[in-house]
Image 1: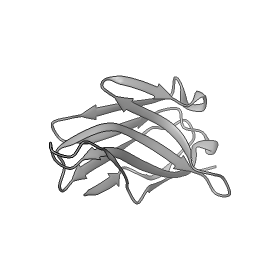
Image 2 (image 1 turned 90 degrees about the horizontal axis):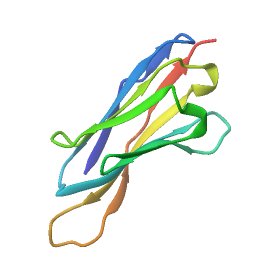
Image 3 (image 1 turned 180 degrees about the horizontal axis):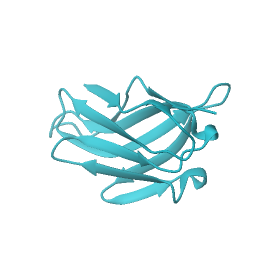
Image 4 (image 1 turned 30 degrees about the vertical axis):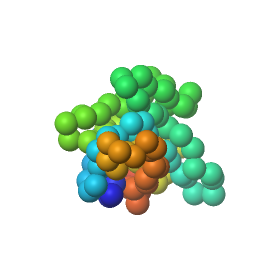
Length: 120
């Protein structure tokens, strides 16, 4: 199983960026998908999650970020608007994956991360 993020890069304050994360490999079902971020010198934190159409956001990004997913592509997106310098971080995608219909459990998987560099 592989999670591959894309869409990171430099952006000016007030600008927008859209992150994508695609799941590939031995996947039967993907349950919860989420975006986390880790800024320099800080712990990794939850940015947003989505499961069965229900979304959850960190207070710091409410109103500016939108998470969505395309189940047919096993892909999750994070639309980020009105970016601030404090949004600069490595953004990681995570997914809860069921390998086949026989297995009862879901396993957490993580991507390698993509850097969003809000220039200041």
